Image (cartoon, rainbow, N blue to C red; front, side, top):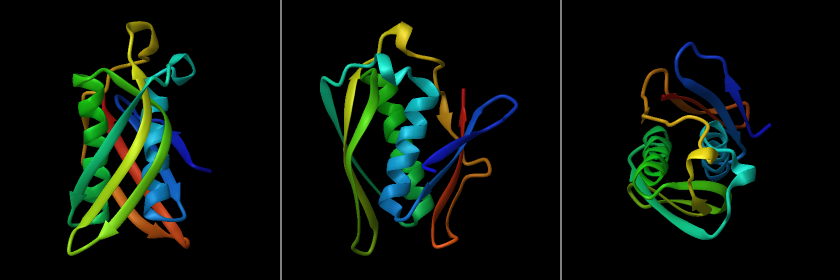
Length: 138
């Protein structure tokens, strides 16, 4: 299982899973776009390069998702396919990646995300892999 949505009273919540931190970020990316975009209607006519850093895995994912939200809001980008995610550690964690994206149109957007929250936000090693719980304000 890559991710699953969790019932939440007023926001969008999901759990993401991965065998590595890279795979966790990739699966969280798919969950993010699946929650807010009819991805089957989205053209893949552009690429989004993502570069974020942080001092811990939880803030790395948090910063990554905020970058996706920023591109959603300012460039009207919706993602369909993650080309790659790479995480390196050199005193600080750095994540880079490339996502095939298309330009959002009103009929493609399910609901608009407002903010990635830190409410109950978790990234941890669990059962031999990585686990994340994310709540996004809508």
